[in-house]
Image: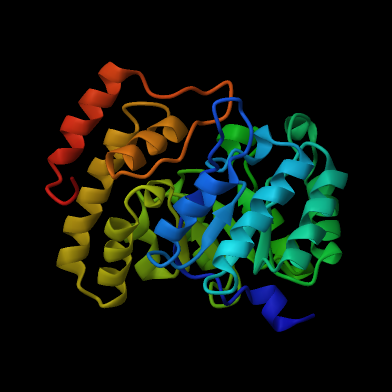
Length: 302
């Protein structure tokens, strides 16, 4: 087994799950995407493409390939790119994973195939992820997102998949006990635990989590990276204060739906990322006004 494939060592730090801009007709907007990536790429440590925030499950295979190719053209190998390839159709997953490797992605990640997820046995999921791992020569991460997929991945299954070559997990369960189970059941120097929210950076990064895939980092990458760097520098008093600021900004984001809210927060910063994909719509004006007033209280951004 290739140690680099297993370890995913390039994956570290603050990694936004990059949102995907669409035009008013619902088509992917490469120009707006390029502009957004140019704003983001020098501020963060990596990018997670076509995940939940990136509207991957709302796009077809061709669109997802176009999005990733746009990201790779703008970002190149300056920072690692993780391509989320999850789908209800396993063959689409394998096709997207092979495309991601060919496009230059550093790693791929996938949720279990959804819709039938609640009826899958662990053996079914093990069979799926083992095939995905065998399909590519780059690291594979399991994306644990029970809220959207309908199934929570057990630590027993993660252990089995690690033995099959799984590089790690992106955990969006919002259950901190999963982190501690991974820490004590798996070697976090080999198995990479990525926290799927900025809300738990302080409780996880100092104790062995390698990265945070932070939705808020789409709009306020500087703030979230500053928090990560404070932890890396063992400046814990500052880190606690920054975690509170991050959590406050996150509460402002959640005054609206997560994806449209990121569009609005970026608009406040003068960055046009177009429209969220149907059936989402832009944040209503009265909610936008409340968000703008609330975010000003941070005293950091205009």
